Image 1 (tube, each protein chain N blue to C red):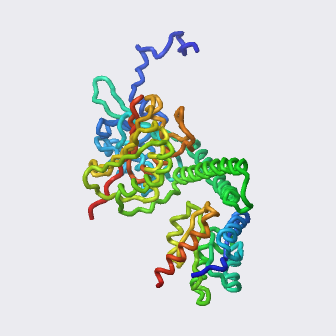
Image 2 (cartoon, rainbow over the protein chains, first blue to last red):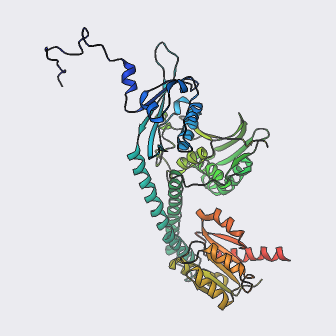
Image 3 (tube, helix red, strand yellow):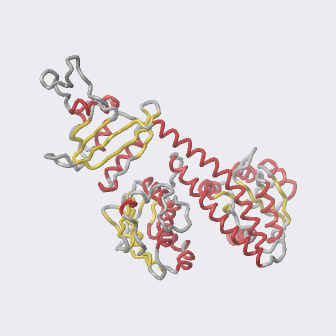
Length: 368
Length: 130
């Protein structure tokens, strides 16, 4: 494209007659909301697009911590999801900042894509650069997809139950003793149906979580109890893979407020993942400890490790690493969503050739 | 307690059939079938089952409401009720137990062990009442 020309045949802006456009003006009129914070998440800049959308004056927000600032916006619950998103964001290590789509009511229902990244301008202290973009169309399509998965999975589960039951009756001798060939083939059917049922259950869980319909039934509980229960449920998988499981608890643990079934599901998903990737005759270690007013669980294997370029994707849906053994590809996605629903944090560290450690931490219950 | 007759309320035809075969084959029990909550209430009164196996999600009258009505009826309230439920409804069922059911079993159930699990729940119940 040729440069635009003014009537006098010169390119513009003409530095002698047109004042240059100030960068602040460009930022202020960007189509997306922009916030720049310092390294402690205190706001240093908010663009006009965002101020206009939230009906706030810059002086009310500047210098405030992001989470304090958002609570100054009168929202009556309409921004709850956004607040949760920012809580998670500000608690994440800089290298694991990810973009999220969150629903808001302004008052009409919209979706925002919140993106945060480390920001290191020259001659100025480093911090974070956040953008807030309208992603309503994307959010709505995502919701439709979740609804579809939910309905389809429900409809699939019932016939699966009948297929599984019929196979089990046949294998159990209801129609008389089976020739070994028939029994072997029916055994294959049963394994496959079991896998389909697990996949359907995972799909149902993920659609429930994503549509905000997953309710937690919170109670005070001890995380190590959940670890032991998950271990028991995976003992046969560990035996088949010839991998041992070591559990270690550091000192006394505070209780947490959590949904027992869901917390066990998180641990089971991380543990079965580790068992799948662990080489035979090695150990998978589970370490439980109290750290900074929360309970932290680490599940480590001595497998191949995850290449650095895939590390940020391990919690995404249907991401299976090469060499993965049969799974739904949803286990880690579900684990992350459940941990975050408990106001906790989940992350991963890995070294190629040495192994992988999945960490999660959920806040300790208050002492009263 | 000895079981001779089971009332099974389940709206899905295939699951009803598998459960029926399973209870006859493994338990040696007579099985009376109902396809919804209303039919279940009627057959509970007419067939005098020893135990009622109740699906949660059924048309007309769901399992919870059916259980509540069974327990309100002086002539039926002594019949033990066991919920048969999908895993996803487990938590609701725990609430449902407060309606007077003695236990719940998770779908997909294993037809080879369903009868044994029912017996086990009822034996636990007998011990409590002794």
